[in-house]
Image 1: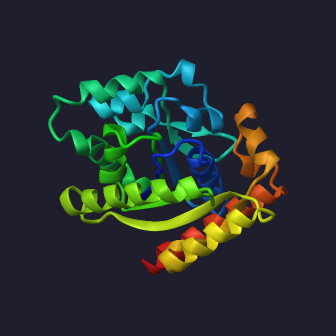
Image 2: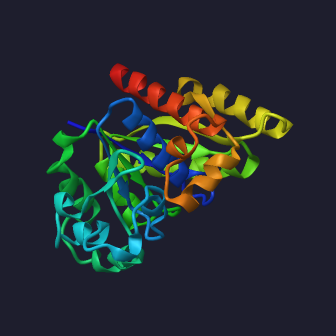
Length: 256
């Protein structure tokens, strides 16, 4: 049985996709079997894994509507050594089309149940909004990984996300919990970053991952080559941090 995790934060530009793609590649380097589910119509995780989103025969869209299964739609990320359930702009239409479907919040959960024995980890890259797609991700997952920058506005958005997770836990998915908060794009030279980081540790304790992802140019360059940063430049500080994060995730899961 795979451990299924959402990477979620309704604030845009906080490194959700970078985290999902590089955590998948980092776990693959640790000999874990990984499926990355791209639940964002922008398809950035699909491209970052080296898959052409324009030429998809089947995608997350068809899986959500029940016209294709995960086994038929998934593709292999050759540079990342993990499987991808890819996405493109068509997925935006699923929001409207799912309104009249039965069990609309559990479409993804039901689809993943067919393949979860084939993987150790399933990582879901959620869109930057608390939408029906994000709700499907939260209903399918055992836990949520929240990437966030150490800045004031990030703290504001965090409380909204935590409240949403509590509501989903209470009403739709009793297995759902916050796995941890990941500090990303961290710049130790900024006093504010250090202050917010300390606040997070004070309020959330061991829910804050020990690994900190630094702001790193090589991680930012990697998607334009269609390669995870972990593979693009394994010696960079960003890649090393995501490999360390993968190892921390494996340890944390063993304790669950």
